[in-house]
Length: 227
Image (cartoon, rainbow, N blue to C red; front, side):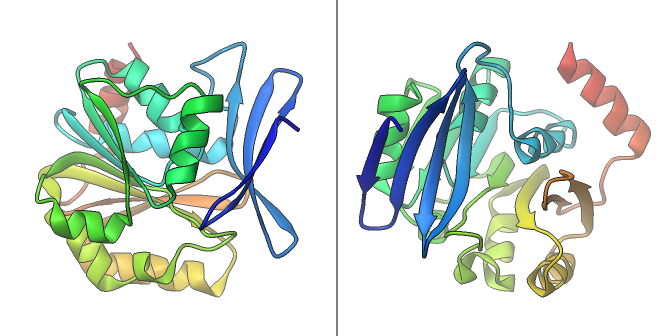
């Protein structure tokens, strides 16, 4: 164990095992892994759902502005910051202690393009009218998404903050009744809902306000991005 931090919102543990640094939250006796960083390979995304989440990047016509709700150790924002040097990335995290721990132990760095904000994601979206090409929602309290981030009203707010060709992706734990209702609710707000299972208990719901690009267009954009 590297450190244990108690904040107003979380019981945070940072642990190191071989080349992996892990941030986990403990709640009611259960450990929930929030983030894993490969110390030998900074561009590795060891957790399957974080790799699945990057599929959203193939959907927009162009990517200039990215918003993330939920930080953890910041592995996704660090990866995107390195892979997409032209894009600006705003990350909103409700717990200032998580931001501080990610800066101290996981080497996340703010600069002119990459910024971290302490606040509730829904409140932040209400106050900030900026629109984004990509919005990634990965906010959990223990094993569950906070209820106010699961409503039709929240999804409609996300839709308002997307560019016309934009995309949002939500990390949802599958295999539960809540999962089915979440997917159904997303379908009432967005014209396209496509599901990308991680194979490890989560599914990424990729949604667009307009009909999604064809599989052929997505494949060609993904190949270009990979280059």
